[in-house]
Length: 82
Image (cartoon, rainbow, N blue to C red; front, side, top):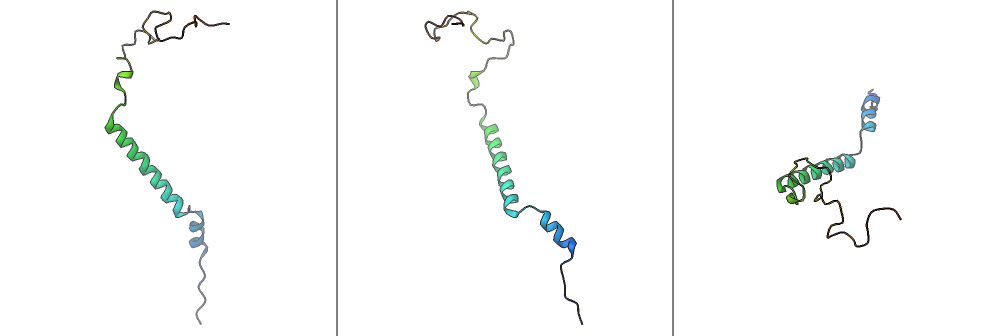
């Protein structure tokens, strides 16, 4: 007489250790979306190329060098402290 077949423990163990297929699909889709967005962003280039200076590195302030209140500053705000 033939013995009944039972799943062997090595067949069952790897199946339990694997993540659900839905999780694998979600992670694959997430990686695909990030890759595509990076590729589109690289192809589009910088959004506002004139916003940064030329990179001469002469001053760390990045201002116009006057040191005082400029025309765009709020009136009545002359320094800190209260």
